[in-house]
Length: 353
Image 1: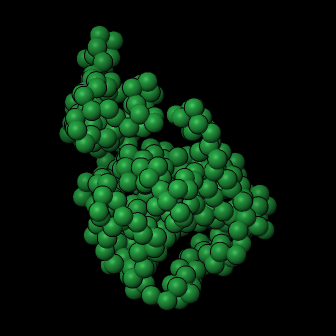
Image 2: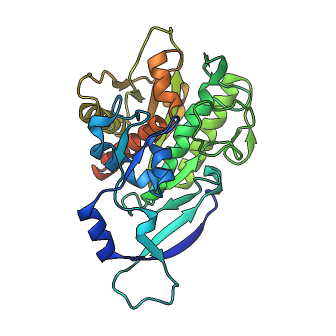
Image 3: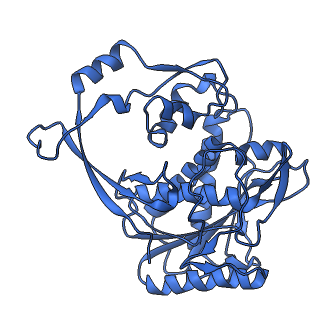
């Protein structure tokens, strides 16, 4: 079954006059403390970090390291729409034209701090997405050491996948998370503790044998694909590579060589990343690529059109910043979701995969 949820309708009364005065007279600011990232800073000042993330970056671009990191002790401008600017009212008070219905859904898989999903739009309504994070269960995937602590591919790929799922759900998509860890949720730490309790969709134990493990995922995805026949369906697989320590790589994408829709999906996300790098890191070129790689088991055997994403090299220090920083993991999920929206809005190419 699809992830369980319940709807919460929240009525919000905007105090327009006071809010406009605040926006015109002064802009809220905050000083970054040691250990602060963009998400934590926004959250501490009553702002939904996922709604305000892009606005914060745009407002503070000249005051960020690598376009995403805060400097300790510096003052940052905070987007004006804060939790303090709204007043929760009783559902009976429906007379005011200022009242706006906000739909919210709750998903326990995202964890206590992140389980609430505000519905931003209906842009992906009717679309079905299968999300697979690499490895899991008895297989942690690529490993590295950071500050004398072991870090594992499956933990970070899973965290990014959950963040991506939340973004897609916010646009009314139907989302199947194929690899699940029911007690981790979205985590905002740099070092994600390694465990081996992940299961496959339906609560199935993940096999240790690689071929059996991959076949299990293929069977689950293809079975769901058959059940959703006739719907717009896409598959997104997230991995983290392992190469020599000196090899810094950008995010890159694979697709099936005969899948026009898979190529279009990979190209849409790739194009989005190129635009983001140009905007937020104009002094460095984005070298990520997208190409066919049908030899990969999941690329070859699964039926939905798909994009296979490699996030970075877990052993490279520069790539580790991309992977370990929770702000970066959120940005990756956001950018992927924007590429997904771009792909969906462009429509399908025929009926091929």
